[in-house]
Length: 392
Image (cartoon, rainbow, N blue to C red):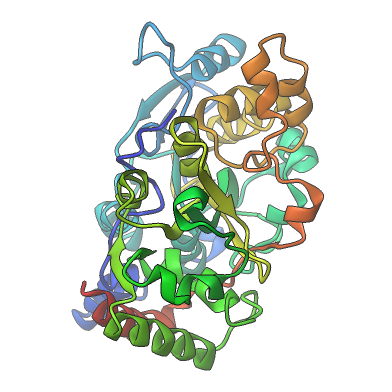
């Protein structure tokens, strides 16, 4: 399982992509947007059976005896003859964006055929025209098996340019035994008995949706006034010292040690925390929670587009998706993988099929939504206000 010391959702950021693009524009760099017809380069897939795949650390299955070996990738190569140059080089969305954006702005190849970024960053790539449209006629597994709730985010309607790698839920984790009561609502975080015992995520993109949902906002179409109302509320709680601190993924150690009793949390982390402490519970609040994804995309001018598309489709085979889900314990974007796990002769593996934090049940799904992303026009001013509140 992924180490709790690291999370793909919790890297800190400043003004990020919008700030960088604004700076480049101010230097007289030509417009960054690339129209669809200029995104694809010469595809060498037919004669070069390889591809370069970049992902986050600890986000794929590994062999217990050889951590450098990824069984699902090895099986893909055996099945197709396509060698995968797999690198764990993405440690922060903005950092990676900064690394490859100069090439994309100047219409040059990045050396990457397939990358995984958080959907709020994938939105930047799509809006800038830096992600190629995938050929769904060659991806029958994706077409047939992708979770319906993840099929059409606002930033990429129909998922033409992106495909979820893994998904997850931003909700609330708490120690029920230590707190002595249930938490059912975001509003429960602001009760007096939790003063100084609550943490929130420091990243704007990680925090805002759940907090707005606590105010009854439909986060699929939230507004500027919804954002500032949420900030006013958090600012008030900071002044009262009700919020202990803002965190990255180190919230897990605070919760485990008892320094906090309730916090914003990711579903995948809590599965692991519960293995050591069954008193820790994860809640999808009654107002709802954010269903998010980190997605695969093919950058412009990738040299092995067809090979990359084949790998994407391979991971949407339910048997392969089940193997990956059993390793990483995030929400599986392939619901049909549940039946594969349920049929496993291994008891612990079969039990994963019944875990709603990997395969949300119908009741939970009714409370999950994919939030509208922050637009490039909004980002600079919104990030400035949020970062001032959290102290970034």
